[in-house]
Amino acid sequence: MSAPGGRSRVTSHVLDATTGRPAVGVGVRLEVRDGDGWSAVATATTDDDGRASTLGPAELDPGVYRVVFDTARYFAGRPSFYPEVAIAFDLADPGEHYHVPLLLSPFGYSTYRGS
Image 1 (cartoon, rainbow, N blue to C red):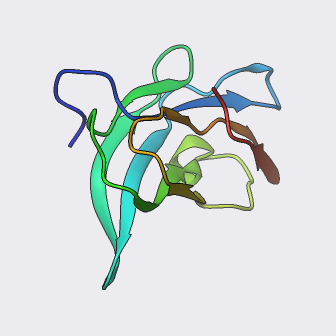
Image 2 (cartoon, helix red, strand yellow; image 1 turned 30 degrees about the horizontal axis):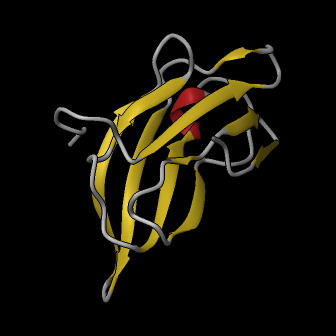
């Protein structure tokens, strides 16, 4: 379900705060809120630089979306608190690029609107 050709409208970059390195191999899912809850739009896995740059199509309709990170799998075999991190956001302008970075540790995380 990753994006076909073209640039993804939504991208992410995951950094592991405990190692100071990119978080490689994190599963990432883009979802859109609809009348029944959430529907999957695309999936990706972070690359060697911790980036998910093929997360979703080049065109998306305005609406509420979320990026869900599979942190349980990433931290497998290590104690951690959050099995997943879900970050919801309003995609108001379909012409803009939406970058959703995640700074991750086993017991906390932070995010912001990236560029």
